[in-house]
Image 1: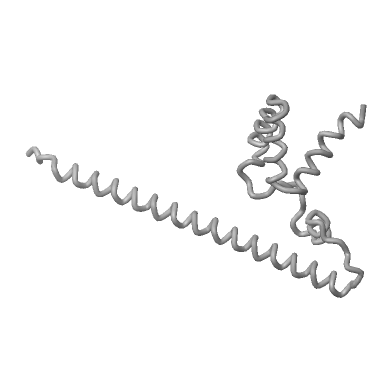
Image 2: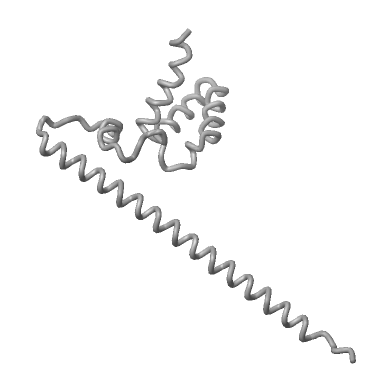
Length: 138
């Protein structure tokens, strides 16, 4: 019974390691050969957010260079100095990517804030104009 329970997890891991293209290929093949399988894969991809996220292997820890090298198919070259350099470079690139994504998030937040402030200023201006348009009863 345990092999029945683990094969979907193994298939999911295998597809995650190969990326979004593998998921799409599996879905297309599912539609071609047995359409309910393709439909089920499409529903699962949407439900698990694999369809719209840039990363399929969301369970991986980004900070662990060994897991990153292993998940991307990098094998030890046998030269420990080169392997350490490669791991450092990958870690640095991941840190740069994280910083850039944080920068983009701050940029989006600043744009949202400026749009909201402009909306509130416009609303206040319209409220003041409507007050100024009312006749004063004495």
